[in-house]
Amino acid sequence: MINKMPKSGRLATFWILLLSFIVTAPGLHLSLEDSEIWGITSSRRFLDEISTVSSAHIKPLFSLIFGTIVHLAPTDWDALFFSRVFTVGLAATGVFCLIRLVTSTYSSTHQRIASYALLGLTVATPVFLLHFTKARSDTVAVSLCLISLLLISLSQNKQRIFLLASTAVLLITPKSIDLVVALASFTWLTRDAESIASRRLKQLTWLLSPMAVLFGLALIFSREPLIRALTYWLDSYSDSPFNSLTHWSHLISAARSGWIATALLTIGIFSSLYFFFSKARRTTLTLIERAFICSGLAVALFMLVHSQKYQFFIASRVPFLLMLALPGWVRLLDSTLTKITATRAALAGVAIVMTSLALSINRIHREQLFSLDLQKTVHASLLSYLKRSEVSRYWDAIGLFPKQNRIFHYPSPGDRTNEDMPDFVESSRPAIVIRTPKMNLLEPYLFVWLQKKYAPISDEIHVRVAHLTGDQFSPDCTLKAEEILKRTAEEGLSGRRYILLVKTKTNTTWNQIPFRIQKSGNRGATKLTELTELTELAELNSETPQALEQAQSQRLAFIDCRDADTQYAVSETGPWKARPVSYNSTLFGYDGRL
Image 1 (cartoon, rainbow, N blue to C red):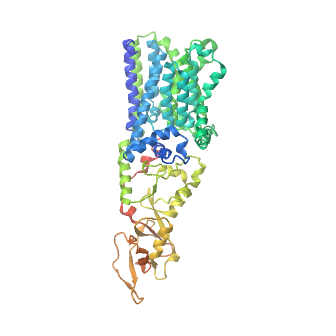
Image 2: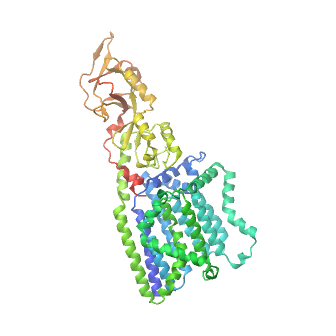
Image 3: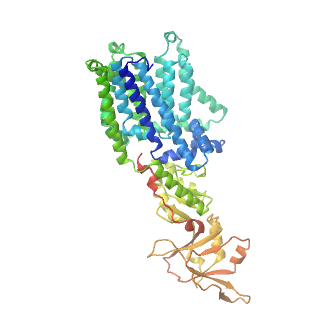
């Protein structure tokens, strides 16, 4: 098709194809968001815990794809990186199919120049560049939908493609109802003349066929995932606070970041609606243009009522806003462009698009706080710390290590289960908590829990401790070693070596406690066997089977017994000896740019 186009058309196609690569390639450099990491990590539960219904089962196809990537990846970082590579490739394919759809819709050179200019401006906006390649179920579903739309427009067997594609996008995420409507619009409006005379019952059958497949799967396997999926979908569109500025803040931010494209899209959308809702003017629209408008309008309406219009969700729906604006935009510029040569029009379009792209890249460079390479460095540092600590369990709320983390809960705004989070994690008793910004949504519950059960090594890494109460000490400020071992067992500490910690009223930082070990002699006398103050980490050895028996005859005498405001605790040695660790929580936080 490209070879048959005029020279100017081939040049425009070249620039658009080059642009499609440019707008997806940054995904190999842009940092991973916490919600992406959570989705990738939790997906492995679909394979590991097939009989237990979890959040991964609500999006079975998404979880199957990324769970397989996690399973096959040699390391934790490879699991995250390969997942991003997959979504970048899928996004590039989706953009390519979008270009092909536009190419097949408009045969006139001037019309293609107008459509390419709007397409280039749209995909060059910061919100699209930053978020369309993210490893999110919304973007994955849209990329698959764009591929299916091209196949529907070219195929004779449209209904079969509709059935497969609609079922697939619903299995990727239940929020894809609007994509099913878009697919149905294309299937319905681009069907052959012979299909127009088909019976109403047959038409209704293929429209409802994706739902029938899902219900059939639910009857065969389990109804619970389907019920949860429906609840998840309803929650996504219910209780939308239309009168709240927060509800529209992300949409306003996305519009401002690409105000040129936003203005032109808005003009094109209203122009398309003007043509579509006028019976006389509607006849000037081709079938595929009507499909563009119907599918775009359906997606736009669903997006407006969506309760959480985050940037990644907006980016995933941008292609359909483009489809909605294209017919009207082309007709507005058609008469103007015919007055100038195609070459000049193409050069003007390329100049405008490249200028917009340069502005977007400059904005991204200023706002993007870190890159994927920097995340990789910090990720490796954290992994090294965990290995040196030799801990069996940890928690970070977003699942930084997909091949290891088995404690799952992703804090979400307004989620009532956030209040139950401390109890949920407490049942697993992680030895280390790596604090990520997403945990701020759990306050004040998280802070109270950490204060009670953990001691901070740094502002962002907390280690589980067993607090020692005053009534466990003797009047001479000694403590039986067996009391320490008893407390470690009660708190679920599983290390082989322990340290004693102290925090005073004047020094609120947890520090090691210097002490001496007393042993009972043969005649019952008490003598000091180690008089030297320990300047290194004070360790209590519990490696041997005789440890508890030895502990019964040992007492720890503190060099300087403090007042009642002093707090004492015992902790595993490994996490403290493994210090320091380089970690900046914003590298994996939602405040790092959604």
